[in-house]
Length: 107
Image 1 (cartoon, rainbow, N blue to C red):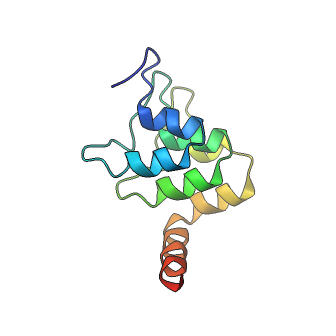
Image 2 (cartoon, rainbow, N blue to C red):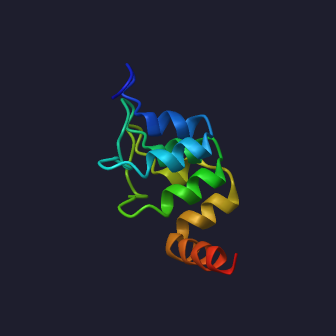
Image 3 (spheres, one colour):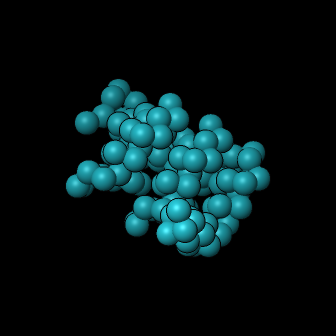
C-alpha cells in the first residue's frame, strides 16, 4: 500500500517519528525495509533527513537493511543527516546493533 508519492506506511512512520508504529511495522511478514518512494528515499533516508536517531537505530538493527541505497539525487542516507551521532551509527552499524543487544540483556 502506497500513497501518490509512493510512500509506504513505514516511510511515513519514519518521517513522523512514530517509534511505536515503526517497531510494529517491522514485525510484519513481508515488510520491505528498503522500499523506495518516488524520489528514491527509503525509510532510513527519511529518518536520517529528519535526524531521528531512535528511528535510525531501530532500522539499522533490522536484518536486510541496506544503508547504501541511493535516492534519485544520488544521496545515501548518511548524506542526509547533520547529526554526528547518526553519522556514527551509520559508519559502524554492526557495533551499534551489538551494543544495543548487550544493553537489552543487561536490563
